[in-house]
Image (cartoon, rainbow, N blue to C red):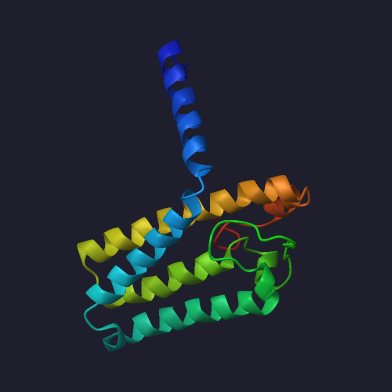
Length: 166
């Protein structure tokens, strides 16, 4: 059981998180962090093409991203965790198993860089990238739940990033 003080602390943190995630700069900040981390990982990589495994993992990630793009309309796609006017829920192709395949694509492609240059900083950056993408996904999901009542059942029948697992 939580004490009254602990409950107050949890309520306060919940209110603060809601305020931050609803701030107009929140989506832009997440995109900035995402691309900054990706840029740092690319810059710090010491030979991406020297690892066949790294290149193979990168290609798998790129295929996932291309597959997602073939089922998504350009007007529906948004790099910021916001919904565009007229957005439609996509449930075909890879979207039948994963709600955020573009984020899966980015995670897998950057894992290719990580495998090519395993350093503590690369591991740290890759984990930070996953956290940023999780925050983006959670923001998008909160918007979809407000926008389309079908999203709740879609959410129950799919996974966040990895089919059948996560």
